[in-house]
Image 1: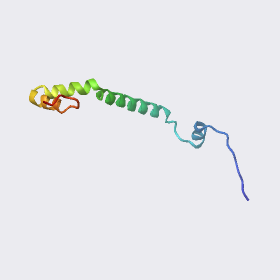
Image 2: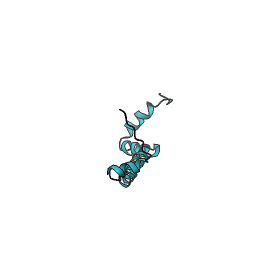
Image 3: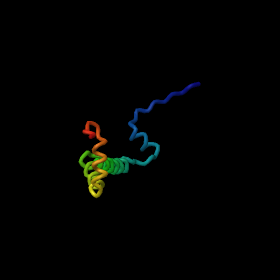
Image 4: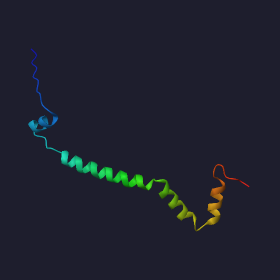
Length: 78
């Protein structure tokens, strides 16, 4: 004997029917935090930020900066 029962429920209705908690608000807060963290990290990878960090690090040592510039593709290596 085989018995089939079909329920026409949305996922939210099913979760409520079996007593699971509604975690949508927690998921929304978590996603907002993740999006904020990703945006912060992406801002650190902008070309302007990277160039600024490199030049600040290399300015105290002009010889190192000159040697790195000579290694750049297309540089006149005389």
